[in-house]
Image (cartoon, rainbow, N blue to C red; front, side, top):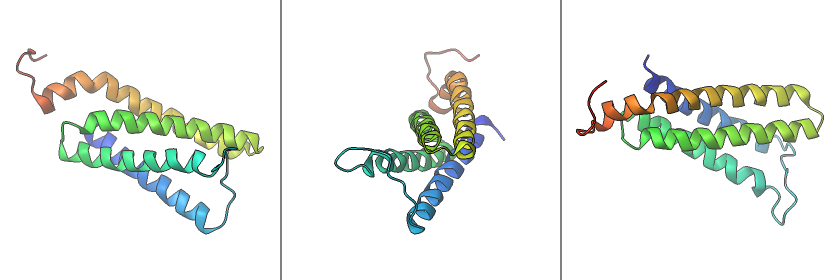
Length: 137
Protein backbone atom coordinates (compact mmCIF):
# COMPACT_ATOMS: atom_id res chain seq x y z
CA UNK A 1 0.00 0.00 0.00
CA UNK A 2 1.49 3.35 -0.96
CA UNK A 3 1.62 6.36 1.37
CA UNK A 4 -1.34 8.08 -0.31
CA UNK A 5 -3.64 5.09 0.17
CA UNK A 6 -2.40 4.51 3.71
CA UNK A 7 -3.06 8.16 4.57
CA UNK A 8 -6.53 7.93 3.00
CA UNK A 9 -7.43 4.81 4.97
CA UNK A 10 -6.06 6.42 8.13
CA UNK A 11 -8.03 9.64 7.54
CA UNK A 12 -11.32 7.89 6.81
CA UNK A 13 -10.85 5.44 9.67
CA UNK A 14 -9.93 8.16 12.14
CA UNK A 15 -12.72 10.48 11.02
CA UNK A 16 -15.29 7.70 11.22
CA UNK A 17 -14.04 6.57 14.62
CA UNK A 18 -14.08 10.11 15.98
CA UNK A 19 -17.65 10.57 14.74
CA UNK A 20 -18.70 7.28 16.34
CA UNK A 21 -17.10 8.29 19.66
CA UNK A 22 -19.03 11.56 19.66
CA UNK A 23 -22.31 9.86 18.80
CA UNK A 24 -21.70 7.39 21.63
CA UNK A 25 -20.81 10.10 24.13
CA UNK A 26 -23.82 12.22 23.26
CA UNK A 27 -26.22 9.26 23.14
CA UNK A 28 -25.17 8.02 26.59
CA UNK A 29 -25.34 11.45 28.22
CA UNK A 30 -21.64 11.80 29.06
CA UNK A 31 -20.46 15.19 30.27
CA UNK A 32 -18.54 16.57 27.30
CA UNK A 33 -18.57 20.24 28.30
CA UNK A 34 -15.04 21.60 28.34
CA UNK A 35 -15.36 25.35 27.81
CA UNK A 36 -16.40 28.25 29.97
CA UNK A 37 -17.94 30.61 27.42
CA UNK A 38 -21.57 31.37 26.66
CA UNK A 39 -21.79 28.12 24.70
CA UNK A 40 -19.19 25.93 26.45
CA UNK A 41 -20.27 22.79 24.61
CA UNK A 42 -19.36 24.33 21.26
CA UNK A 43 -15.80 25.09 22.42
CA UNK A 44 -15.10 21.39 21.97
CA UNK A 45 -17.76 20.14 19.56
CA UNK A 46 -17.18 22.61 16.71
CA UNK A 47 -13.45 21.84 16.31
CA UNK A 48 -14.23 18.12 16.57
CA UNK A 49 -16.92 18.35 13.87
CA UNK A 50 -14.55 20.27 11.59
CA UNK A 51 -11.89 17.63 12.21
CA UNK A 52 -14.25 14.76 11.37
CA UNK A 53 -15.46 16.47 8.20
CA UNK A 54 -11.94 17.37 7.15
CA UNK A 55 -10.56 13.88 7.72
CA UNK A 56 -13.38 12.21 5.77
CA UNK A 57 -13.12 14.71 2.91
CA UNK A 58 -9.33 14.40 2.78
CA UNK A 59 -9.50 10.61 2.76
CA UNK A 60 -11.90 10.59 -0.16
CA UNK A 61 -9.76 13.15 -2.00
CA UNK A 62 -6.63 11.07 -1.51
CA UNK A 63 -8.34 7.86 -2.66
CA UNK A 64 -9.67 9.56 -5.79
CA UNK A 65 -6.26 11.11 -6.54
CA UNK A 66 -7.59 14.66 -6.38
CA UNK A 67 -5.03 17.47 -6.37
CA UNK A 68 -6.69 18.95 -3.26
CA UNK A 69 -6.47 15.64 -1.37
CA UNK A 70 -3.05 16.19 0.14
CA UNK A 71 -3.61 19.82 1.21
CA UNK A 72 -6.93 18.78 2.76
CA UNK A 73 -5.15 15.91 4.55
CA UNK A 74 -2.49 18.27 5.92
CA UNK A 75 -5.11 20.66 7.31
CA UNK A 76 -7.34 17.90 8.69
CA UNK A 77 -4.38 16.13 10.29
CA UNK A 78 -3.32 19.37 11.93
CA UNK A 79 -6.86 19.76 13.27
CA UNK A 80 -6.73 16.21 14.60
CA UNK A 81 -3.38 16.75 16.34
CA UNK A 82 -4.89 19.85 17.98
CA UNK A 83 -8.01 17.92 18.95
CA UNK A 84 -6.09 14.99 20.40
CA UNK A 85 -3.76 17.24 22.41
CA UNK A 86 -6.75 19.22 23.66
CA UNK A 87 -8.32 15.95 24.81
CA UNK A 88 -5.12 15.03 26.67
CA UNK A 89 -5.45 18.20 28.72
CA UNK A 90 -9.19 17.74 29.19
CA UNK A 91 -8.84 14.20 30.55
CA UNK A 92 -5.77 14.98 32.65
CA UNK A 93 -7.80 17.78 34.25
CA UNK A 94 -10.46 15.21 35.15
CA UNK A 95 -7.87 12.82 36.57
CA UNK A 96 -8.40 10.21 33.83
CA UNK A 97 -4.80 9.34 33.00
CA UNK A 98 -5.62 6.29 30.86
CA UNK A 99 -7.79 8.30 28.48
CA UNK A 100 -5.20 11.08 28.42
CA UNK A 101 -2.51 8.55 27.50
CA UNK A 102 -4.64 7.09 24.71
CA UNK A 103 -5.19 10.53 23.21
CA UNK A 104 -1.46 11.25 23.51
CA UNK A 105 -0.84 8.08 21.49
CA UNK A 106 -3.37 9.18 18.89
CA UNK A 107 -1.67 12.58 18.67
CA UNK A 108 1.69 10.86 18.11
CA UNK A 109 0.18 8.64 15.39
CA UNK A 110 -1.41 11.65 13.71
CA UNK A 111 1.84 13.60 13.89
CA UNK A 112 3.72 10.71 12.29
CA UNK A 113 1.26 10.52 9.37
CA UNK A 114 1.40 14.30 9.06
CA UNK A 115 5.21 14.23 9.01
CA UNK A 116 5.29 11.46 6.41
CA UNK A 117 2.85 13.39 4.24
CA UNK A 118 4.90 16.57 4.48
CA UNK A 119 8.13 14.75 3.64
CA UNK A 120 6.49 12.90 0.75
CA UNK A 121 4.59 15.97 -0.52
CA UNK A 122 7.11 17.01 -3.14
CA UNK A 123 7.19 13.57 -4.74
CA UNK A 124 3.41 13.22 -4.44
CA UNK A 125 2.86 16.61 -6.05
CA UNK A 126 4.95 15.58 -9.05
CA UNK A 127 2.97 12.38 -9.51
CA UNK A 128 -0.51 13.89 -9.10
CA UNK A 129 -0.08 17.41 -10.47
CA UNK A 130 2.77 16.61 -12.90
CA UNK A 131 4.38 20.04 -12.91
CA UNK A 132 6.08 20.26 -16.32
CA UNK A 133 8.63 22.82 -15.08
CA UNK A 134 10.15 20.49 -12.48
CA UNK A 135 12.44 17.64 -13.61
CA UNK A 136 11.74 14.11 -12.44
CA UNK A 137 13.76 12.77 -9.53
